[in-house]
Amino acid sequence: MLLIGTVLSAAMMRFMFHYDDSVGFSWDAALMYGSIISATDPVAVVSLLNTLGASKRITTMIEGESLLNDGTAMVLFLILL
Image (cartoon, rainbow, N blue to C red):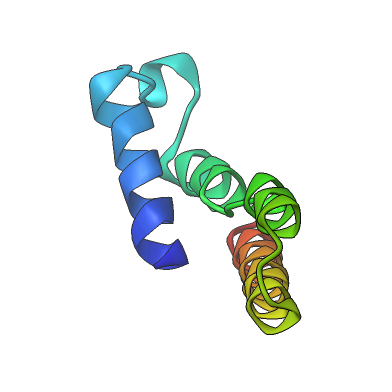
């Protein structure tokens, strides 16, 4: 899912906002931007689950998914760098 979000974010920057090579925004830069921006941050969801009294298991699963997404985004960014 992170890879799809990265590519879609990069394509949006290149085509919708017209950030292309004429302004110094290469595909590499667009993909690095996409890798950073596409990593989700479920802090609000975890806070809401705690407020609603959801089980600790579901909260832990969402926190683990967040760590996995953040780590994958960092690895992808470093690969593109």
